[in-house]
Image (cartoon, rainbow, N blue to C red; front, side):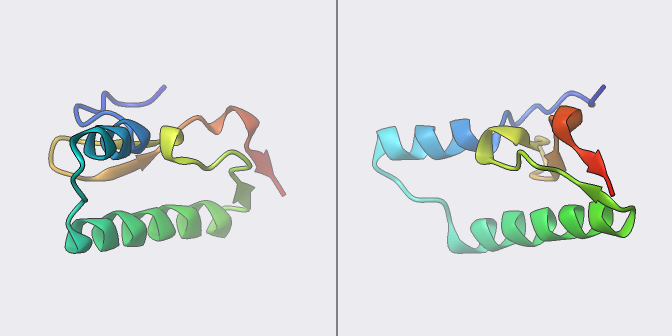
Length: 77
Protein backbone atom coordinates (compact mmCIF):
# COMPACT_ATOMS: atom_id res chain seq x y z
CA UNK A 1 0.00 0.00 0.00
CA UNK A 2 1.27 3.46 -0.89
CA UNK A 3 0.10 6.79 0.39
CA UNK A 4 -1.94 8.90 -2.02
CA UNK A 5 0.24 10.91 -4.41
CA UNK A 6 -1.68 14.07 -5.27
CA UNK A 7 0.88 15.04 -7.92
CA UNK A 8 0.29 11.88 -9.97
CA UNK A 9 3.15 10.01 -11.54
CA UNK A 10 6.20 11.39 -13.29
CA UNK A 11 5.16 9.97 -16.66
CA UNK A 12 1.95 12.01 -16.66
CA UNK A 13 3.90 15.15 -15.72
CA UNK A 14 6.31 14.55 -18.61
CA UNK A 15 3.47 13.83 -21.06
CA UNK A 16 1.58 16.96 -19.96
CA UNK A 17 4.63 19.15 -20.56
CA UNK A 18 5.27 17.48 -23.90
CA UNK A 19 1.69 18.18 -25.06
CA UNK A 20 1.97 21.80 -23.97
CA UNK A 21 5.36 22.16 -25.63
CA UNK A 22 6.95 23.19 -22.34
CA UNK A 23 9.87 21.91 -20.33
CA UNK A 24 10.27 21.09 -16.67
CA UNK A 25 12.44 23.58 -14.84
CA UNK A 26 16.02 22.30 -14.56
CA UNK A 27 16.10 22.75 -10.78
CA UNK A 28 12.93 20.64 -10.51
CA UNK A 29 14.45 17.91 -12.70
CA UNK A 30 17.55 17.86 -10.48
CA UNK A 31 15.37 17.71 -7.36
CA UNK A 32 13.43 14.72 -8.72
CA UNK A 33 16.64 13.01 -9.85
CA UNK A 34 18.35 13.43 -6.48
CA UNK A 35 15.26 12.20 -4.62
CA UNK A 36 15.07 9.13 -6.86
CA UNK A 37 18.75 8.39 -6.21
CA UNK A 38 18.18 8.73 -2.47
CA UNK A 39 15.22 6.34 -2.69
CA UNK A 40 17.17 3.79 -4.71
CA UNK A 41 20.09 4.10 -2.29
CA UNK A 42 17.75 3.42 0.66
CA UNK A 43 16.37 0.34 -1.11
CA UNK A 44 19.86 -0.95 -1.89
CA UNK A 45 21.00 -0.38 1.70
CA UNK A 46 18.17 -2.73 2.67
CA UNK A 47 19.27 -5.25 0.04
CA UNK A 48 16.22 -4.57 -2.18
CA UNK A 49 16.39 -4.27 -5.98
CA UNK A 50 13.38 -2.59 -7.64
CA UNK A 51 13.54 -4.21 -11.16
CA UNK A 52 10.84 -1.97 -12.70
CA UNK A 53 11.96 1.60 -12.15
CA UNK A 54 10.37 3.89 -14.74
CA UNK A 55 8.59 7.25 -14.84
CA UNK A 56 5.17 5.60 -14.39
CA UNK A 57 6.35 4.13 -11.07
CA UNK A 58 7.67 7.41 -9.68
CA UNK A 59 4.91 9.23 -7.81
CA UNK A 60 4.77 12.84 -6.65
CA UNK A 61 3.19 14.47 -3.63
CA UNK A 62 1.64 17.89 -4.14
CA UNK A 63 4.77 19.32 -2.47
CA UNK A 64 6.99 17.65 -5.10
CA UNK A 65 8.26 14.83 -2.90
CA UNK A 66 9.14 11.68 -4.87
CA UNK A 67 7.76 8.28 -3.87
CA UNK A 68 9.00 5.15 -5.63
CA UNK A 69 6.13 2.73 -6.12
CA UNK A 70 5.14 -0.58 -7.69
CA UNK A 71 7.38 -2.75 -5.58
CA UNK A 72 5.60 -5.93 -6.77
CA UNK A 73 8.59 -7.21 -8.73
CA UNK A 74 11.22 -6.11 -6.19
CA UNK A 75 13.67 -8.67 -4.95
CA UNK A 76 15.48 -8.98 -1.66
CA UNK A 77 19.06 -10.01 -2.41
